[in-house]
Image (cartoon, rainbow, N blue to C red):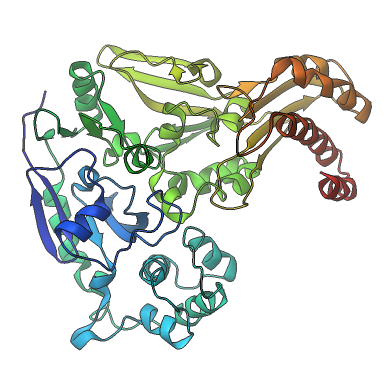
Amino acid sequence: MSTDTGSIRFILNGKDVSLRHVPPTRTLLDWLRLDRRFTGTKEGCAEGDCGACTVLVGRVVEGRLAYESVNACIRLLGSMNAAHVVTVEHLAGPDGLLHPVQQAMVDHHGSQCGFCTPGFVMSLYGLWLSDPAPDRARIEKALQGNLCRCTGYEPIVRAAEAVAHERPSAVFDPIERTRTDVLARLKAMTPRETIRVGDGDGRVIVPASSDDLAAVLAEEPKATVVAGSTDVGLWVTKQFRDLNPVVFINHLSELQSIEETADGIRIGAGVTYSQAFATLCRRFPALRPLIDRIGGEQVRNMGTIGGNIANGSPIGDTPPPLIALGATLALRSKDGRRDLPLEAYFIDYGKQDRRAGEFVESLFVPDLPADAHFAVYKVSKRRDEDISALCGAFRVALSPDGTVTDARLCFGGMAGTPKRAANVEAALVGKPWTEATVEAARPAFKADYQPLTDWRATAEYRLLAAKNLLTRFFLETSGETAQVRRFEEVA
């Protein structure tokens, strides 16, 4: 086991910070506002939905400095080691001159009451840094995680369009001006040994490597492992849970690799949705609309695919399509590694096949067979930034004569775990892929699922929607787009 280094170190705007006492459940937002009085960062929802708390976080990635927008309300302070935290206060130029992003919001009347404005500014600033020529779709995607109750979004979008090509000298921009210096300072803060802060009821552990993580969990099998905190943050802000100790892993580069092979993709458990987006969507285009609807930009920058799996939620968005694709999970502990089919990991509600001291290390997603069709559909009350009422994934392989040779259907939101529709699959395999076959298979959903009624949907709605999604999948794979449109209007 590595020795104690005793402090969480990061940069806040331009100043180095070293904290020897970090409560495990202290959010970055509370620390910024209450401890440091950076009150430009607002609390709106405290659950990562409204974006009023948006800040930028920079980290060293493959030797360079990369910045992303995050929700400070659910980001935990202990995860900030070797990071650069940038708040809206840092954007001011000499003599209080507004940054071009801020000036564009003024010029295009993008603010009314002003409460949400700092969050919008920081999201637009993150886009401004990363994309010199964003189209409207990219701008709207960058603003998915920011809500405004006053202006509507058109003035804000116009501000983003106006400022996109405005590039003042690097001397003006606070990040470009100090990029080389900040990079060197963050490299010096990168832990070479496990950091342990606090004792008793308030312990934070930051392993220096995945080997150290395995050793820590062997000693602390009941520790809460936190990557992006998009779920755990709500345990803190909404459920007021006491977590102790907390082990932060969002900095571990060994868990953030994406390896493409001839037969699939291996994704490290610490890879975020944003990091995985390009690769997953290139190999599996049907995943693009799903990932685009997982939270907002800030949530996708924080949340990890491994965390979405590890938590075992029955309404997680990624397990249904990954199970339908036949993904395999790699679990690791101090004693070694083991692989298991992803669907076998989910045992019952709140119960997963993860032994004491184990953590999710990676996921292997095999390529889609040449004879297979694949699609995934998310049904939710609100299109963006909403939890699924149900999520259905479909993979059907057809022989040259149109017979179903293999079927894998998996749903979230229909049972206590993400679960395959075994009876529906059996009703399809060996039959011709026709409307009659699909109609005959629809009643089998009742044998596979007994969904619950809650505020997101009734049991009857979920069951009917699952059946209708199978019909939609058939129509799409049959090329009957006109029928799909009519079907959506009816559904």
